[in-house]
Length: 166
Image (tube, rainbow, N blue to C red):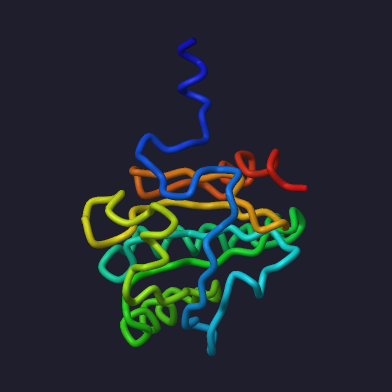
């Protein structure tokens, strides 16, 4: 019985959107220009990376780590987008400094972070923690995981989401 808890892909905290349910729709400003909505990824697998954003370099280094293995995510058919509650003008200098090309979606009112059950899961009640949500090609949430250590290797994430990819 002990092994069951150790291998669970669910986070220990409550989620407002259970695995298997339809992902909440969103439309957010993007660091790559314009807006991005969940419907833009219809028919594709999408890995959302919720993080504390500006002031947490570890959160941005996570994006650097994921980009190093971008080809493996592409091969697995998974797009990646990060979600932060900062203003775009605050995020852009950090993305430029670390040469991050992953779209950062601006959840200014924290509504999307809250809808996905990620708000207040980290060290701050008004920020998302360091967590991921996989939305499959049908628009359903298939996996979620929080990383309180503020780090996960790309290989670990890929290994955990592969069973949920169609």
